Image 1 (cartoon, helix red, strand yellow):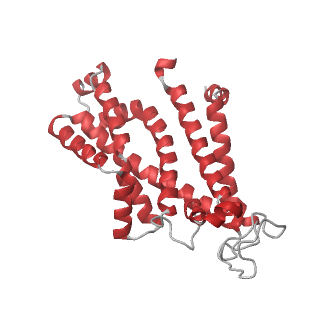
Image 2 (cartoon, rainbow, N blue to C red):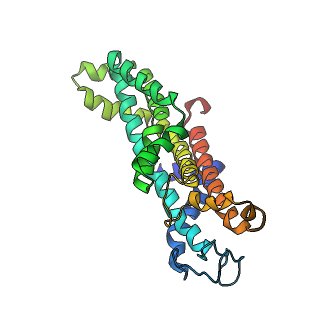
Image 3 (cartoon, rainbow, N blue to C red):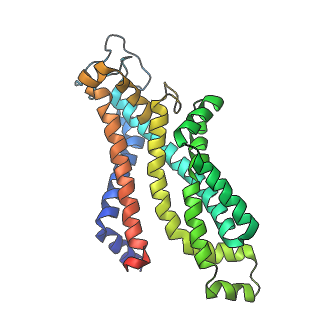
Length: 278
């Protein structure tokens, strides 16, 4: 049975492509720096903004630091921010969505009004304001992305729960004496898990883009710690854009390829798990 499911997943080209790229990015980001001699923070003032060479395969930045070493290590930071921000927002969105959909009434109305209020504010304006208040750091960035992005998952989960809670097996569980917590954990959550899984992949892609955008603006990951987002800060300089491509094309390419891979995976899972397509 398990082998059959794995075989079906392999037949889905979007899942196969997305998973392959993601695994490659994870291996390169977490294992690649072990094979690089240069340190991410070592400054070489005699090699400032030098083009790619045998010693520095992707050149050096404006402080003489090796771009390849910072690119690989920055992948750890960007991917971890995306993962942990996604986990946090999925937890918040799932809990509130289940509570709103299952209990309904005043609880549902209060939670959905909170959702409406959060969604009313432009993300970047609020995120920049919060980052300015609490200060730029990896932990603060994860929390800011999570507390401003859980609303979509909450709405998806609530809609699924509203449909499921009226089904016969839920009514039968209530009739034989199951309490609400048991029903939620044993019957509601397993039936909305596929929707949560698809939403999680898309939320992770969005979180990576948000990290890159905020770090680019100086409100995310704080230098000298590298991330793909703050490496793109060099692209604010017209001289860099025109003649120092190695400073902005590699991190930009890594952001694009990681987001595309996650979107491929999410779309493949949606097609695979959508009952309307079966």
